[in-house]
Image 1 (cartoon, rainbow, N blue to C red):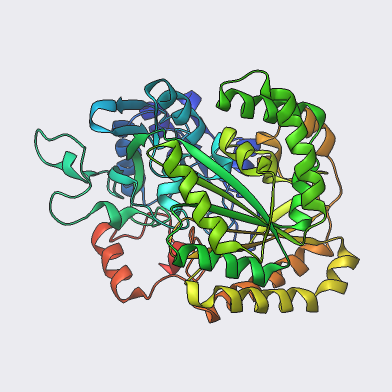
Image 2 (cartoon, rainbow, N blue to C red; image 1 turned 120 degrees about the vertical axis):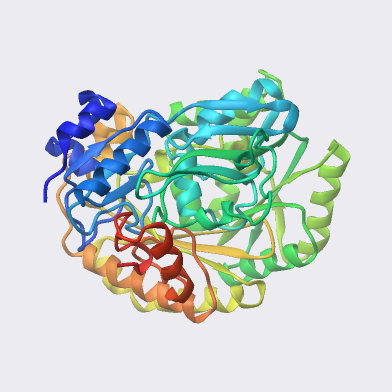
Length: 501
């Protein structure tokens, strides 16, 4: 099988069709490594929905599968071809249309979360859906395809190109002459395409609900261990805490604290800018220093951000959290949530503080099973502690909640060679620091086995997952396969993802 390169070049321009080894190595990869990986035939980058439709029509006629791709910063194999295919990269689809009066924005699938936040800031608005921390690079279309833990309700419409090149519009904008302000105008077809890992089509536009930037309040606490932290997050959700909770273990806090001076200055300056006071830059640095000291002495820490229609409402949400958490948690200065709020997006965490490879495994748990799941995961990792130490593997944990579920995410770090994808998104300084390291053949199978074992533990405690890809268990095929057959009867859209042929 070969890619119809000349035909693709006529559609998008020769400059936007890549077949060189460097482009294929990046375009066919995510941050993990995969035994199923097959190098793509080509990487094509359409610049409009019309170009994407023509590309898919051409590939369908040629019998060549298509694999949609955003930034590729996932870790479940969903954008990694398992057979010869053309990767359709959405990087050029970066348009932003802000409808401030109706509180929605229509953005290109290749737009980053950071770029959207910058565009919304002068309007005093933000996306109702919080993007991932990798949002300085990761794309809005990628999040729509992979799904984010929690709710995807902030997406109210899509433009999707189906396998044969048909363009489908969902939400109220599908109705003739209607604005795209509402998610449903009849059956909620938007939801059909969310979290599909590109199995049903390629998203070219995403319509996002907007909301005013609101007053915020912060608090941080230390706790005695993972189960206690999970229990605290469960208690907050059951009490109706109207905010976001983020927790990390001591090892994660140590890693996060290993910022170079320039990074620390940027973070402190961002906190100061968010507060509207240049004079707070110094106190921001002092707060970070105090936070490092407090976090270094705690097994786990819990960080809260609450929004409200007024300063008093945000403060009352934090007061509720204090009532729920006392006396089991000790309060510390909230430098961490302040910094995360001021600078929500970064790519630095894609590798460890010394350039180690990184890969997580996660589960979204019902409140009733979160604590037991943490205990089971902890036990499984303890059994592997000696083998991990021998291979240079360390484990950090994070947890989060922004609704009636808890996301638990153990993360593996180990010294190893970085792939071209990692190097392509790192700064010049870190590319020079971390490039060219030797491959760690002892760590890779150990991490691979541990991820699979932890995924089984998550399943045993009733977890669901975002970015199912080719790693996590997909829903039963009885309905999924029928939808796939209706939208893609030839099986040309990202074949193999979600367990679909």
